Image (cartoon, rainbow, N blue to C red):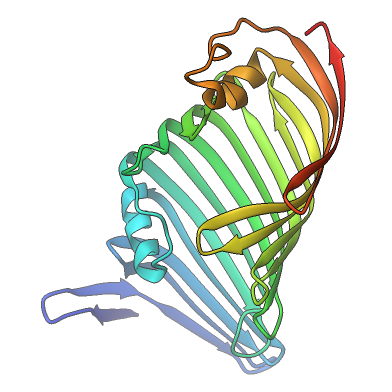
Length: 275
């Protein structure tokens, strides 16, 4: 059938909804292909059984600026951004056995994204990336186990002081760990970065969450290979701006291990090849 969603007397929007109840197993299913929300049309479905519930929401080819505005309305901590272009496609699936979700799975793809922030510390042009994640939520709400995969294959990005030419050097990042919501920390049990012709590294870390941002407390990093000039131009050159080392011609490779304890470097082992 069709329903009317009234957000205000001047902003009524119609959408389609279907429902099915199976008496044999007590299963209730509700679906809508065009729920209006914050200027978008989303495909939404829900299923309820005696064992629990599942709810999904999907959106395709949405304007990235509208998605950002909607997320900002839900969570004031979302960073303020000026988004000039870009489209987003996402899917979100939540499951639970009572009122609160116990697991959330999601995917997000962004194409041709161009954005910046007011301070100039973040910018992107023509960026394309995809994000896939899973979160298992404790009943208390104080702990979240997560797994996350990020891949980017086009465009440029600046995250002060690092500059990424993604079109020339695509990257992939995998991570799994635990967010301690009550304790204000994140334990990265494992991560792996594959940045083509630039850097391959893996390891583990502990990050603390404070009012002034993130702080790296402990870390153990294995650098499989850091390739010059790629790693210099991407990760190092921005740090060296204004110094005699800011315009070097580099080549070669290095690898090794780096360890941090209580925010300080406690051990370094490097292997240098033709640097």
